[in-house]
Amino acid sequence: MGAEEKTFTWEELATHNTKGDLLVAIRGNVYDVTKFLARHPGGVDTLLLGAGRDVTPVFEMYHEFGAVDSVLKKYHVGKLTTNELPIFPEPTDFHKTVKTRVEGYFKSNGKDPKNRPEIWGRYFVIFASLFASYYAQFFVPFVVERTWLQVICAVILGFSCAQVGLNPLHDASHFSVTHNPTVWKILGATHDFFNGASYLVWMYQHMLGHHPYTNIAGADPDISTSEPDVRRIKPHQKWFINHLNQHMFVPFLYGLLAFKVRIQDVNILYFVKTNDAIRVNPITPWHTFAFWGGKIFFFWYRLILPMQYLPVHKVLFLFVIADMISSYWLALTFQANHVVEEVEWPLPDENGVIQKDWAAMQVETTQDYAHDSHLWTSITGSLNYQAVHHLFPNVSQHHYPEILYIIRQTCSEYKIPYLVKDTFWQAFASHLEHLRVLGLRPKGE
Ligand code: HEM
Image (cartoon, rainbow, N blue to C red; front, side, top):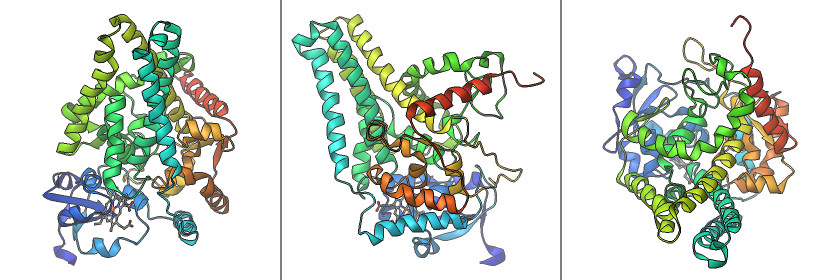
């Protein structure tokens, strides 16, 4: 190889993003995995999402260190010379130790990190409450004759839909339930069909954007802002007068999240073709079906069908209640984890390098809460164990409490601060305080 080795800029790499021509970059090396695609144990769709990109952080997240090296070696075709997104230094001892210890825990106890039967019980309860609250709201005469009962059903429906997002969708998007890519596809599609929001866009936003680049401005789509933006959430973001006292009004806007996401989906996949900094690859027939089939089904079951039996204004009223409940629940749980007072907001240096180990950064950009509360663990889809989830997204949420002590012990040995609040309300208060402080007029403005 040596002097003749082929080189690729990130723009050149980006053009090799299809089934028939699939290149990825990992740690500066470029691999042509076109022939491996159909054999990838993590699924064809998963590798297609990574096509034409530097996938280093996701690759290291979802495989054991070194486990795939012998496969990769066969497909090496060159070097990557420029970077589209920030890059991270080689994993430190902390990163290697925490990964080895957690992987060792599962091996030595003969446990499968992805299979916990409880998860199916959880999904059953979620879908049962979704179907029951929907059916009662529109088709059970005793409920239909009493608006207050319909409102209660709408609240339960909204909460159940949020649980679809926090559980089957979220688990599938991290491949943390079974080892079967078809199961991930079907669970992911429940978000399209029951929430009317795209699983595919979520994969770009969450799996390829937020998780690898947590709280990094310009790379994490969860903290993407325009200028001026309604919120100021990042310390380096420009301040505008509307940010004064933002903590008093911004949380009310979170109720519009689901509405905004459904419109944004179309814009991201079919118009701008990028989710913040994460480019959209060619859309497969399955994703086209799930996207449009899901949108049509969602509007049919939530609006058109009930309108055949109830006045339009009543259906719209109940729809808005359910949708706002889903939105608040999802937004509040997300914000309490990362958009809070004491976390880090890393920025790349002039060479585009984040001068911090990726795993340490995951812990330092994250806040956990309410570890001792089964209730909060259940109703947040275990997002209260957020740092555990960020370090080991491919592990079933039902294992988080078991591996927490390994992670905290390792953090303490390597002097990495692990931030955890006793209750959700303390974590949420920390979000409000973060908004308040960033809303203050900076000195000299
Ligand atoms: C977008 C980048 C990638 C993602 C997100 C990803 C994801 C995954 C996931 C989730 C699994 C586990 C499947 C299971 O549950 O059993 C897996 C397994 C595997 N992947 Fe990937 N993969 C990526 C890229 C690659 C590449 C480029 C290669 C090598 C050419 C590769 C080779 C393998 C192999 C050999 C396994 C089985 C061994 C193991 O589980 O450690 N993957 N991948």
